[in-house]
Length: 268
Length: 267
Image 1 (tube, chains in turn brown, blue):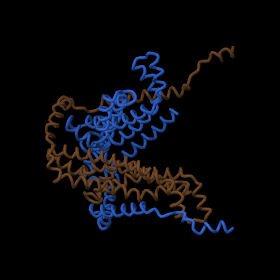
Image 2: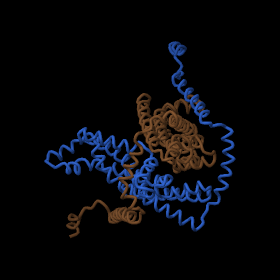
Image 3: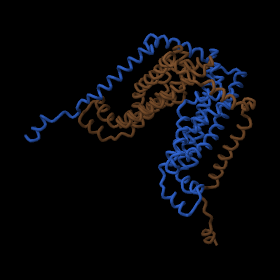
Image 4: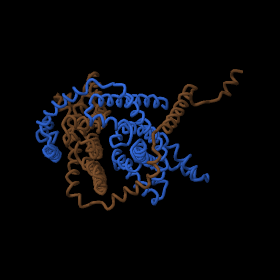
């Protein structure tokens, strides 16, 4: 009897507890969507005239005021690029020591690893716009605040990935150098660095690409770059200038991506 | 003995100087100084900033927990959460067809090129800039934020989903086709089983990203806690700003813990 029931036993992939948990998850997702949909404040009058508003927006944006580029956009665009690049360089300079401290094969103290990782996490969990707000309050409006915001947001990103790359380094070359009696700076430069160099350039380029995108909006909170020009043009309802700036940002972002892809192919 | 010592004398040094790399490093350092001078990043400003920073932190502490402001903050956080949930749902649902249309191994070029262009356009602009456009189109409020983050979700999920589909093995697809299955069945039984886990991975990542960004789009008037936060900043209400920042960080940490639990459920 028991043998027969053993053969006829129905095979199920998940235990009842697992199925219950999954059902609760799906139910929770659907419930969250329904509740949000019912309570979100959407003003229907605004929605009805959305097509008109979009048409109006496009009409105001056309023709794009190309002649404004040399006067009000070029310098802001270059400033944006400087903010992104200098911010990324600063971030790399600060993130490399933190990456070394976070990698447990280089710094064999768990408490130091955790402290470094905590600093990296807190850098990443604050949005770059929030960093920009804080630095505008500290340094005043301008490019310095934007540079610091990009740098502090990027530390967590670069440091985390660099630390992980270091932890994956093979111990062979390092042990060979140690056996030859090399001092620790030589071990870092000749043992670890060649192994993580491709990963490092990949991370740096990837972060620079993101920084270029982000630095374009920092100006909305007063942290310099083309965002400030957009803010001014919008407050004056000069949409044909806003359109020009959007085109400029789009071009720069696409160019940055092409440059990153090209350098990545060359280096890595 | 002598044969070992002989070559050792004219053996090249083990670590040759890499002049192109050194020149590149020097150029990078020179650029950093040049950019710093252009952006007016000077030591005096930095030191002055540190003083301001101390004052700023002094004004932030202790965080403001006045009852009236707390209700304002909770309403803002709730709206951010709504924006995140609705934009993620909408973005995920739209990314499925858009990603399929952009996969070059399933669709003819005249479909994939426009779709890929559309995805690139969705990705090109920062969410906050997209939010500006939508604020103009549909007015201030949560709807603009939802639409802006939906666009960002399509730009991210659909691109990676299309790339994932292009890496699948076509054998299974052909096997389903050979049975005479219609197109939708080929998708459902030949393609989706191979890419569904990766799609779920991209989608959960984007949910997390949307939650973070839903707290930001309010800066340009697209709803959520961002508007309250920016207003507090402009009114020099720094102690309330700190409360909001702590609440945002707490919300993100809770959501990350929740996500880890859910991931464990599916392992």
